[in-house]
Image (cartoon, rainbow, N blue to C red; front, side, top):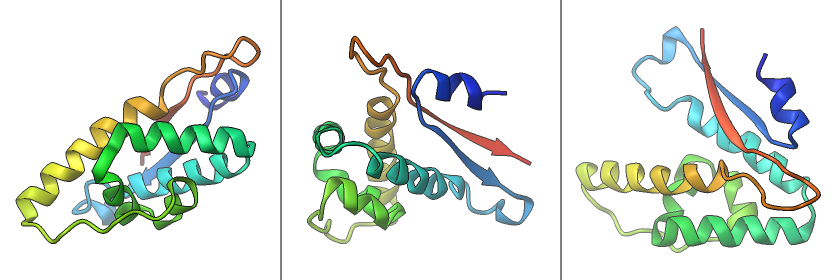
Amino acid sequence: MFRAPVLAANGFFLEGKFDQYGQNLPLVAFPQILEQFCKCIQKESLVRQEQWKSSILKAVGDLAHRLLDLEPALESIIGPQAPIQKISPTEAKYHFANVIRAFHPEVKKPERSKNKPAHRGATGREN
């Protein structure tokens, strides 16, 4: 239902699955979505890959390694990142929330190209 319009608009249709056995893992679908996102970006031209790298790193700043903690394959897009020093679970939760807040708006921005209007978004599906 959502896939066709997203793809028709040159977007990436990303999905993750929540299941009954993963109830104690609130973000179990997010690494799945990041993995699909990486595969989509890797199919783009080198110029577009560099644009993605630049915009993601600009958005998440020093917290980029938190994304790599979730999905190591993202390193192929944003490159190696300096590890973040060990912090308390409370601080880690705060860092994670901040990096997701910064990352999400960056990847859902529509392209402003005259030739390829596109909307990017991520969706999770609950069974």
